[in-house]
Amino acid sequence: MSSNSHVMIQCLPIHQAALINDWDSVRPIFEKDPELMTKQINYLGETPLMIAVGTNRSHHFVRQLVDLIVAVGDADKLFATSDRGDNPLHHAAKIGNTTDARVLVEQNQGMTQVVNKDGYTPLNLAASHGNKRTLRYLLTVTMDLVPKEEGGSPYTGVAGGDLITLTIQAGFLDVALEIIALHPNIVLEDDGRSRTALEVLGTKPEFFRSGSTLGLWGRLIYTFIPMNKMSKEVDQVNISSRALTKSTMEFWNVFRYLAPSIKNIYDIKVKHHQSKLLTKLMCGKVIEKADHDITWKILGSSTYAAVQHGTLEVIEECISTYPDIIWYTGTNKDFHLSLEAITQRQEQVYNLLWESSVHKVYQATLTDEKEHENSLHKAAKLAPPHRLNVVAGAALQMQRELQWFKEVENFIDPLHKKSLNKDWKSPKTLFTEEHKDLLNEAQAWMKDASASCTVIAALIVTMAFAGAFTVPGGNKDDGKPLFIDKATFMLFIVSDAIALFSSTASVLMFLGILMARFAEDDFLYALPKRMTIGLVSLFTSLAATMIAFSATLVLVLEDKVPWIVAPLVIMACIPIGLFGWLQFPLLIELVYSTYGPSIFRQQKSDK
Image (tube, rainbow, N blue to C red; front, side, top):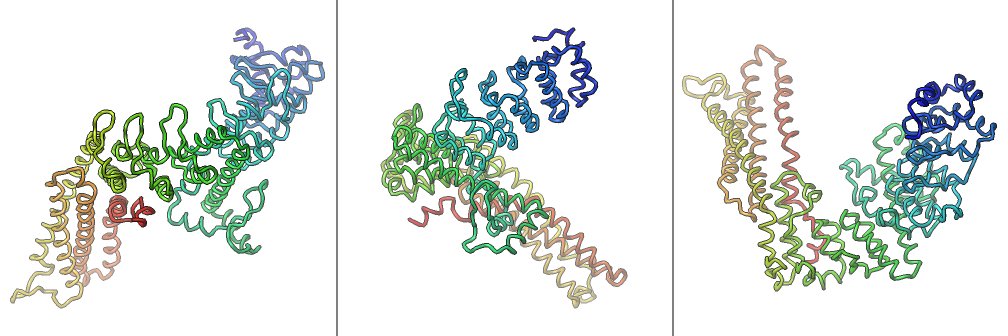
């Protein structure tokens, strides 16, 4: 530390004043001892100017201090660095202090190109810390010059690569479009981690429509909400095929500002459009160079990243721009697009590749030469955790893995179905070994769920059976129920019968699961089918039991308490609603996964 403890104690009033924007209390101190204005006064070796800039509140303090430092002839000390290697402008960029950044740049515009000890310019720091307003300002004042002492422009080399990748990572896609428009070659630069802008964009599926997680209503609003401008800086874009009237736009604008959720969907739609424009622009800039090595490296590494993260639009644009990129093999990467799509369990990428005739011709016999593994070997391996968890529960995860294996098995060359990899394992053997733990987890989950549901269903069977012989109100002398002529009694009888039959069916289904052999292939269809029927039957029996019980109370109490019907209906809905809230998500996922459209629906239509 450059400042000793005596100096820190002595300068404590200055430190405190800088934090609370109290210029008047320290002005006499600075006038008496001007050196204190540029002296390191805290543990981090920061000057009073750096401390005040870091608060993003002490703007008056900063302005007065800068003016006084310049007035006493110490302007060269304005940008003194802390022990961490940051000067005041670096601080302003990190904290998003645009007001004080303007004050500092007015004194020395060349400081916008100075890097800190980590090699970051103020531009890069503003981007990495997500300070969009400061980033926009710095872009207007940072020249595309090559300072003699620095040796490079902030828009070229690693600095340029960092700038564009950090801007994209922060989600400032409109700013990225502006940067590329002014400095097209920046898309060719590598950042400090040897990544290009397009490669980083390929790791961000959430910026694209294919990575959207909007619900049903969100998708509906997304479809109809118009967008006449991407942003203030980008050309006008009409989303609908017809021209949007002024009244239509005003109508949606009102909704956007009254309903935050609609505004959020609008912002998502804007970002999706910006990401597509950005992808297309960067691919175009790369291909304009007409250099195979550059194109191969940038589009190939970007495709590789996009496949791993499932960023479909980036893959589509890269293949459309340079179709041969489908055969990309990077340094130390034994990679083929279709094999990687299977390995990473990216069904959207897999579906996209199926449309390619190249894929159909070569996929059936394609082999990873390093591992001696074909497509079926890749499908036999356990999915990466982030892709395995796209469905809930070990049973559904096992089903999804089987769906992948069966799909690949359907089109692979028959001679390759039993081929051995470098460890002398066939695809089926590899699948069994890789999924051994998942199979055990799926078995335990199915057994536990079935055992619990069996107990509940058996209790309902007992109650429903007993209710049929102990009808409300008792029986007449001839043995007929007392309330047999009332409609409410018929509701009771029918509900009780439904409860008995459905709960019995539920018990049988869950017993069928408990007594199953739990082989791998059973999780593809047989076990999910039984679980689905069991849950539906259990829900039906529970609902029927509540109706039968409510009907009984109405029969007994309607003469004494006429208003009892409405409260009973409401109370009966509570357990039914709770069951639906807790179990329906699982039931819907089971039904959709087992009986819904295949995740490989595109190629299914070709077969």
